[in-house]
Image (cartoon, rainbow, N blue to C red; front, side, top):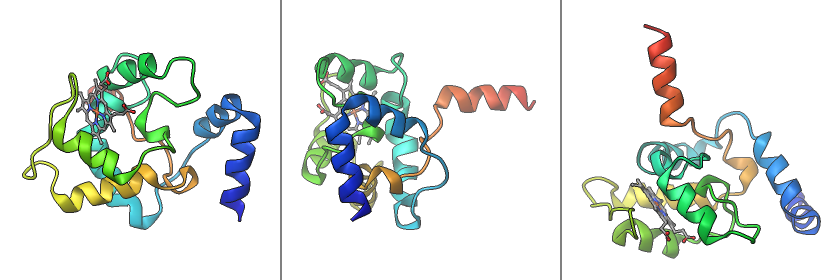
Length: 140
Ligand code: HEC
């Protein structure tokens, strides 16, 4: 019920509210989503995390300009498992197709579960690779 209500509030109040909700996401993902979140962090976030310097996020910002669809995949609530599977196995534009030796069918199922889960269950955004590299540099 809480989820239905919060979805209704997001729809009613529009993008501003959706953005504010994304910014306050913290903590780990729900335990059953951890595997999918790790797959996302490794294979997808390097192009799809929330930075306009990334190829996927930048392209999708252009594609969905003027709509309330977020550019970062991790913030989308409109994706379905078949659509995710299609793009992961076929690629598009700069996005390569991923082999089963890279993203297995089990990984893909977990990834889809993560990207279609309620936002509140996804926990904090995965860090940008650039952030991780900056932290590694700083801790040397
Ligand atoms: C090398 C960069 C790159 C990587 C890595 C990458 N993508 Fe993409 N992805 C893109 C680009 C660029 C587009 C947008 C193409 C376009 O302009 O339509 C895209 C588009 C998509 C779309 C279509 C969304 C839409 O609404 O049109 C999905 C879904 C998607 N990617 C999922 C993934 C997933 C899941 C992963 C990880 C397994 C991943 N991508 C990894 C670059 C990447």
